[in-house]
Amino acid sequence: MRQKSLVHPAQLPLRFDDPAELERVIEQRVTERFKAEAIRWRLRIVLIEAAVITAVVGSAGLAIGQPAGVVMHAALLVGASCIAGGTLLLGVTVAGSHFCARLRRRRHA
Image 1 (cartoon, rainbow, N blue to C red):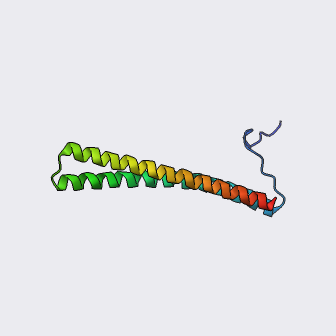
Image 2: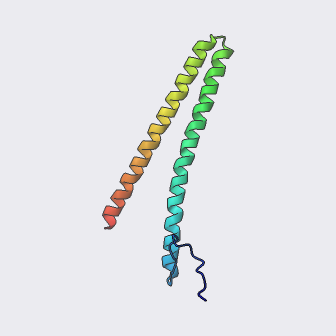
Image 3: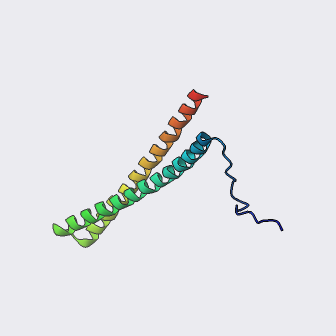
């Protein structure tokens, strides 16, 4: 009777005789994962910053006795502007990172 393979058919078989090759593959996968997580964390920071600034503007407006409608409008406008600016900054950062990586690959090729 034939023994069943423990490797899932969709999984890539890892057969590395060279430890340096195995190290390179692992390092590449970890780098890709950390890049994806870094973008998520930066987006979370932008959202948290926008929420905090919105709360500060709202509470400051209410503390000085401004009408609630005006305060809410101003707070939401500041929060939306913060999200837009942060998202734009993240986009420019990612685009610059891709551009620098492309230049590095072109130099090494």
